[in-house]
Amino acid sequence: MRILVCGGAGYIGSHMAKWLGAHGAEAVVLDNLSTGHREAVRFGRLIEADLLDPASLDTAFALGPFDAVMHFCARSLVGESVQKPYDYYDNNVVGTLNLLRAMQRHGVGKIVFSSTAAIFGEPVSARINETHPKTPINPYGASKLMVERVLADAGAAYGLRSVCLRYFNAAGASPDGDIGEAHTPETHLIPNVLRAALGNGERLKVFGDDWPTPDGTCVRDYIHVDDLAQAHWQALAYMETHAGAHAFNLGNGQGFSVREVITAAEAVSGHEIPWDIAPRRAGDPAVLVASNDLARRELGWTPRYTSLPEIIETAWRWHCAPTF
Ligand code: UFG
Image 1 (cartoon, rainbow, N blue to C red):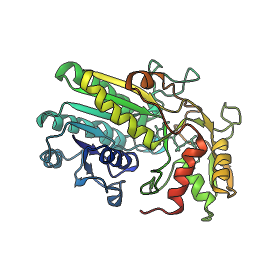
Image 2: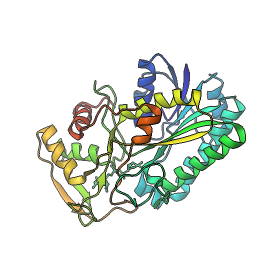
Image 3: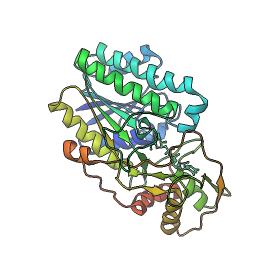
Image 4: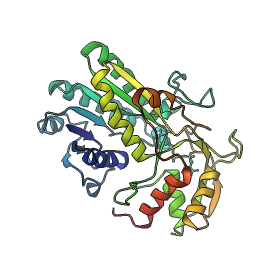
């Protein structure tokens, strides 16, 4: 099996390419290296191409035939999307349309799409299932929801098979310390907590302690990056027997506050983490926790990393000795 992994030099995509290699499939990585790392592509061939440049996509598809596409390329920062909505709609919506048209030109009929919990906006129930209202509160979430709609329409019109996987908060790193999460600038909570733990002079900023949550800090559902990879693998199998467009929420089903993450990271690292309260960050919902029942039932998916310390432990190993 040969899979085109778009965004395979990035955090989640590189773990996916590694997973494919470990399961006997061939990954061809397409990436523009705008935020990805050449060094993260160790488990497949890298093609430098840009979704906003359709000619470069044809060059990549010429390396096929591909059995399916996995699409991880995106601008994905909630706060930045509020400041730069045009960039988000361009990359995430126009870029994906270019990719879908390229798939059509080259006869590739299956795609697994990286969607997000951000499509739901402020939750109206304690755990978010697939029928939850989809009312994004930031351009990032809106851009991903638009693509979900495009995929549903393409399923009806062209017979495209798709699975949208709505990640909650991807976290952790390959347990062997080989690859991990490296963003510049880093905006995500767990890497920032671990950098503060390493004592590099930076104090962690906690964005708001007056949220309507038990300790006043935001609650998120952290899901290990290899558990996400496993779900993509199962989504490939699912599309063999299921036509049309499908979507699943992927989280642990448990929420942890920012302060709970700090406490867990202190225990894992053995270091005290210096932090200060900062103003709320634009576009942040107070709480995001998944119901993962549908993914368990339909995909046969079971997350292996169920405890927060276990997830943080893999990230800590990477942050202590990053290779890029
Ligand atoms: N936070 C801090 N300090 C930091 C970084 C984050 O307090 O230095 C807080 C945020 O305000 C938020 C929580 O920690 O409350 C998690 O923030 P992240 O930036 O780690 O993650 P987000 O929840 O903003 O977003 C992530 C992905 C999105 C995805 C979303 C889905 O970046 O792509 O999870 O839940 F949509």
